[in-house]
Length: 350
Image (tube, rainbow, N blue to C red; front, side, top):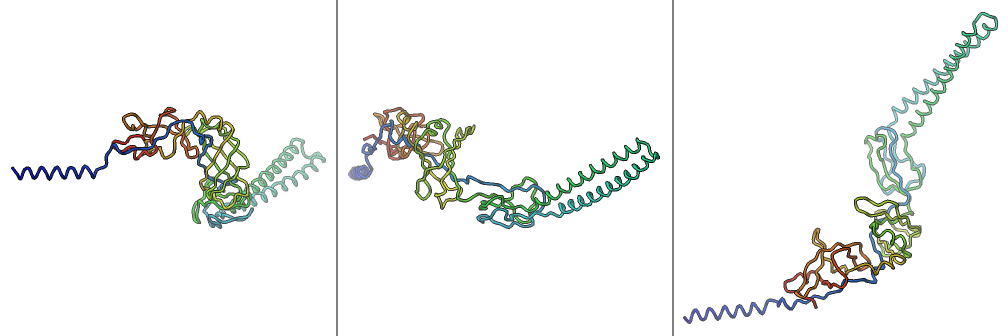
């Protein structure tokens, strides 16, 4: 009996020590913030990307193997500089054939003109009928048309042969090359892409529901990757929305003073004032850190009398340090600022 009593005493002691080592769930208190209107909502903050204002894709207008690719990505080229050389042997053969056709047509025209002169003399002497003379005159006109047709074909062949040497349409930088020497260039195939340096624009995609207020913003700046903020020289909101993403492309050309940039870099576009300021009071916003993202789930922890409950929400774009809540919350509700701690068992609001 004494042994059993000793075992119970040991177990009780271990249980007491274990209880002292475990944290008290009731002691997990999490700070909360109210859901409501925020002054930060007056700033519309959205991601953008830099792209050239002037860009061209050089394509093949005739078919042929690529004999030489004279530039590479990153090269600076001048207007008229050779870029790509295509195999033009077939085109040169067509040009030679056209030259021969022109000579043949001109020779036939001279023969017809000589026959016409002789028949006119015979007509004056009464040895040829008027109908026969008319037939000869028609033959001369037909020969003249054949010469014109042959000359046009020769011009077309010469123009086509010129397509074998592709040159830069303007002073540019090679953005990308799409072929290598030995590739087959079919008509319409892209060979390389050029862009004019020094003229870039920020492109952002605005939710269709926010287009009116964004377009009416009085202050718009583009925050560059190095932290500089520049004002765009113009604002170009495109007239149509993407049917899938329900966004509208917003183009913001940058001044030439914004140097050291490359196409494809990410930027931030911030719009404030005007309609954006007036509409801020109608938005519900929560801090960025209060949003819990787990795969496809976007949620917050809402404080109740019995603790926190997880509630899915639908959010909009970031508004400075706040996130706009489109659905799932009501004004005045309180949510956990730290969703990780709020998810622990026994967590309560401060």
